[in-house]
Length: 200
Ligand code: GRF
Image (cartoon, rainbow, N blue to C red):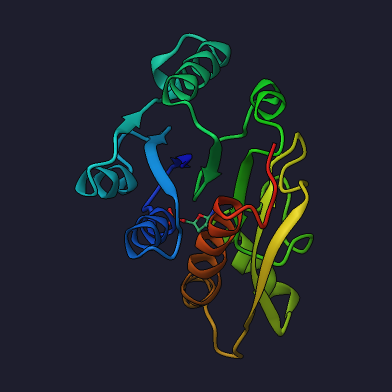
């Protein structure tokens, strides 16, 4: 049984896609053992609770230093005995010590075709604003291993999405989520659960 912990910060639509895929059997042999958010008010935590998944708000604001926040995050992950950590709309920078401890066991969903519109400063709507500013005709989403470089780890899956002439950043974001993110993130977890993608 693959034990998965999902790190979130916001609405949790990618988390919901994972929850639904586990429930439907599209992601086999997998148990979401916990959801952790740096934002205690994240709706993603409500989604976890509704699915009877242990939900934890661990905010950096509650810790004197960033190191103490990281220490608590690592303690909680160890307690949950995570095999795989999934960053699903997670906006915190993963500390190097966590990248080292969970080498090739942390994956992230990024809302563009990496390396385009990725790296420091590219998150949320900013990614889609940059794609529209550049005038690309296709964009999409990427699932990649997390390493010490923001959005720099080995690419595991990508899915392209059409950009339409009258797209706003919000409309494009929704299409990328619906047609790409919510498809390739569950599929990548399923590939890990079935051994098609090796982790660790
Ligand atoms: C998504 O676009 C995701 O790619 C990005 O954060 C956004 C919100 O995701 N990382 P969610 O609804 O919280 O899953």
